[in-house]
Length: 328
Image (cartoon, rainbow, N blue to C red; front, side):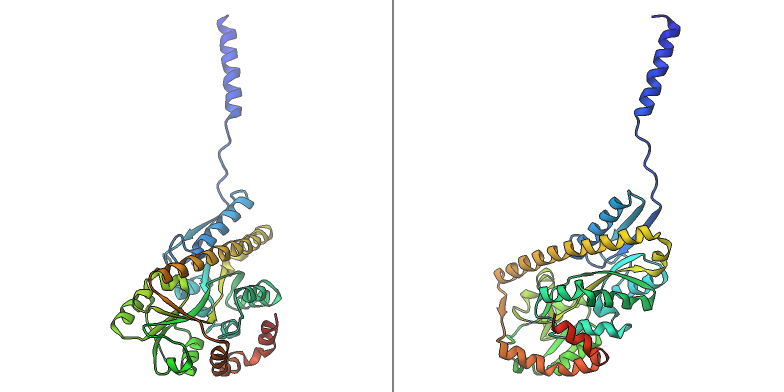
């Protein structure tokens, strides 16, 4: 082949090959943070990752959300404060952490409010849930969706089969005023301790009991020092997925809509994971020697009757909402 023709052909092939190369991916328009205090692999952090993956996929990589698990941004209280100033872009926090700042949210924390998980999800996925998501706008945040955290019940080193068994008991609870008041109305003594200190406190007798869901009870090995789990399900405390108002204002409306949709889809995924985790950990705790106590309907009615003053104290201004929830 003539040298000139050979060079021309070589150049043509080079140009064709260059045209076949993939263009480098455009950098994201937004790189945002997401805080969750639970460890990687926990249902809420898995839900957060699903949320981030969906947003990235549906914005063609233009919005990237980096999930930081394990409390890297601090406690939930600290994350709540950072969201207000845009120090964190997205987060998942327990309603018990923020209800003191937004009293209307206490309605969703009232003890024995929900009949079961399905009842709570119907409430949160409907008009009532949307109304409560808007409450956080008072703190310059955007409510996106509701995650599940199961039902909290009492567990102890001695059986709790009736109200009488609670009298005078020292019980570790979350640092939430409505929960503290509930325990006092039931005749017990509430104590607030760091979550990590509960095992030692049960083991040494510093406290008589605690209250939490099955996954927490099993994962923290509390069943080893408090083998009796009384499944009264006194509290179902929703968890809320939030966006910082400052971050939200920077996003185009198109992306805002995508984020909302992805948050709600991720909530459905998280709930599925939670239900599986609850079933698995309950079975594991029982296999390891825990004893589950189920209260009769009569006993449960006694518990409900004693906490009714809380409905007036915390829900008095919203009794119409309480009634709508109960009738769902």
